[in-house]
Length: 208
Image 1: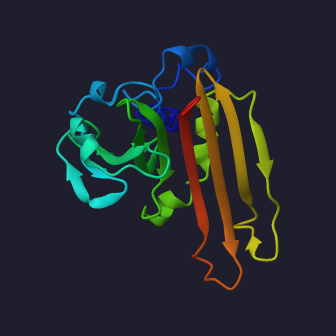
Image 2: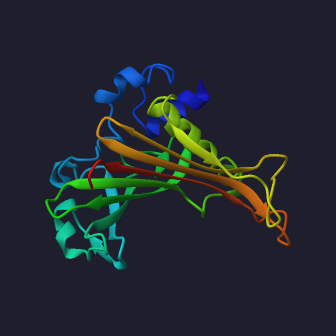
């Protein structure tokens, strides 16, 4: 129950993870943000630290200032953002995980993509669970229909506490192309406390 309550704070899950598939048509991708919506429809209240992904020294006062950020080679403009603690007491958390959030905006001022990454600067006890966010995201978009590839331990990548994860999963559903990357491993010749544990979720509008 505790895990489910934490998940609801980040993703808008259905009543239960098993019942997530029927709710997909109405659930948002992240809070009140949906891939494909106009960036000007995202409320300013509840979000802080809007920063150009291509120029982290350039901060924005509101979403409407997005054209002042530089576009990337793909002609999309990235904006990183945090949750305002006034509306999210625990800060920028997704399903109980500290996260780095980025929206990618196209020339028509619509959200072409959303990226959710576990925060590499999170405290160790939270970072150790970072690879689990990918599993929660897969449940959010339905357990079936994923195309996954899983690498195996190799000479330079080994298990952490008997667990090894180096997985990439993709799925297209409801006009979205979703990619989930999960990693948990330790590189040889590094301190036992130095390990890779992360999830990266990319949700793109099909055709973007």
